[in-house]
Length: 254
Image 1 (cartoon, rainbow, N blue to C red):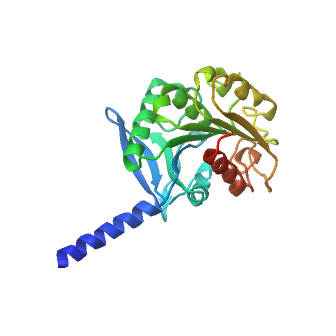
Image 2 (cartoon, one colour):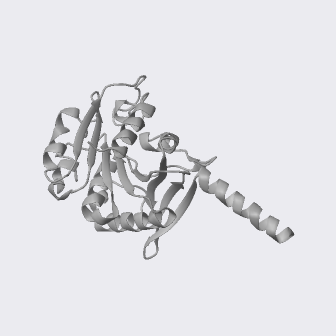
Image 3 (spheres, rainbow, N blue to C red):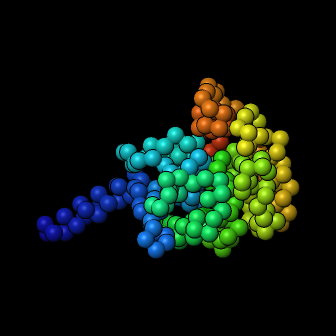
C-alpha cells in the first residue's frame, strides 16, 4: 500500500512538472545536445515549436516558464491558453549563439530534425513551426528541409533584407507546400525586417496551398533597440493579440 501511494505521488509530481514546463537537453549530433523547453497542455490541438530571434535560447526555466524576453518566449503562457503544447528550440551545446548563416547550416538543420522527432515522442499532435526575427530563418529552412515532419509555418517579424545572410526571401520558398502565415508589425524599424519588403515572402511562396500576410499596428510603449524584444519588432504591448491571430489562423488557415 505504501509503495502504491509513493508511486502515485511520484507520478503526480512528474505530471505537475510536465504541465508547468521543463527543460530537456536533447541529443542531436554525436557529442552534442540541444536545449529544449517543453510544456504540454491538456486538450491541446497542436504543438508549436518556437524559434526565438537573436542568438537563440529561452533563458532559464523558472516556476515552469522560460525567463527569456524574446516575443515568442515571453508569450509561452499565451500559446498555452490558446490550446497548444509549447516547445521552444534553444541552443546546441557546441555553440554560444546562432547567427544568421548558422541557421541554414547542415548541423543546425540536423539539430532541428532531432528536436522535432523528440517533440513528437512527447505528443503525436501536428507540429507547427513558429519563428520570429532571426528565428524565421531557422523556421523556413527547417520547413524546406523536413516537410514531412511539419504541418505548417508561421513567420513573425521576418528577416526580409536580401543583403542579410540567409534572409527568408533568398531561400527556396517555391519548394514550400504547406500553409504559411506571415505576421509583421507595420512599425517594425529593424533594418533586417522592414515592412515594405515583407510581400516578397508571399510572392515567393508560389506552391503553398494557403498563404497569408497580416500586417498589424497595435501595441504600446516601444523602447530600446529597434531590433530588440521591447520595440515594435517584438510586438510589444500586443502579445496576447498577436498570439490570438496566430492561433486563429492555425485553427483555420485561409
